[in-house]
Image 1 (cartoon, rainbow, N blue to C red):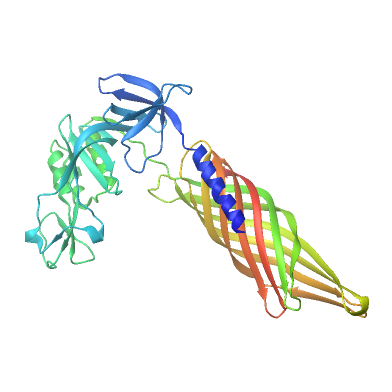
Image 2 (cartoon, helix red, strand yellow):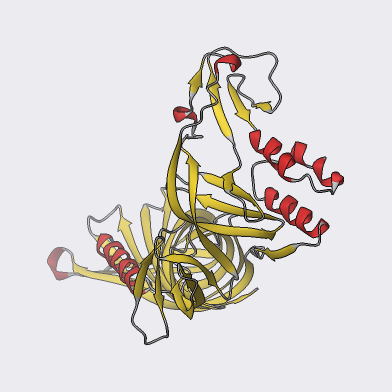
Length: 429
């Protein structure tokens, strides 16, 4: 079994290597204002990139361009835009064990540590107000606001830890469930200051606005209110799909007979597998983490026999037969490392096997007598599921492993089951 797992891992690594490139139609603008149409290796970045790979055509030379060489670029199909900007980034963590620590509210140091950097900012909205997003190497989310062609400035959001819990907080501060943790929502005052050209109804929405992509909705509404909204980043559609699949299942069985020292290997059974299910993307993972439900059906029948001599040359033979009709219900998680044309994925989960039929029979032929016994095994059991696969648009193929153990101490037999299957499927999105 370990050899098969090694093969699975090597297969996944091979798939990953061959799926590193994902060139899609795009265009970029250089620092001297020239625009070039071609293809960019689109990685669906969860952290803002500091360089891109560009080629003028499918067979053109690939160029690796850093943020210091490109003024901006756009992925055409997704209409996703990035611009080059020199910005100041808040250099504070918002993780609990790394929060800045102060004695009380009055001692909070408002001189925020910052670092200067040249980066690609993701464009969320353009118009009277421009809104940008930057995700740093620590996966901290930063929002930047620009009024017209003015400076690009970060909307300030801080989380601090206090030694003394404060009964009353100052304006612009919000208490958390932990009395010693306080959030400084300075970004609300910064937004209110920028939105001074009318649309008073939107001002009232700022008070309850969290530091999230809802800021984009507010900025877009403000630009539309002033009839000056020139770009809005398209909303990412939440992935979900129903699917059906069919394939072949190879079940390997072994029976440990407590009356005999040897382990009996039942013949591997090749049978049909049918399944259906539903899966959906975990929010804010850009469709890379998937959760799903699956219902499957299959049947299997395996036979093994032993023949040996007992005293004075007399023969004895034992015939074993395992017959199963199975309904399988599984919960699984799936990770897609790269969203490319032929995207590899890895899958793991837990399931329940419900046996509509689960019968183990033993036929013992002795010189002077014949013994036949039938054992009805467990009606249901838990099982683990591991798999790797490749998907392309609506279609996918998957190689998977499932384990099972039917243990019934009253029979004197322990059964170990290893199920390998290859399935093909289609999604309905």
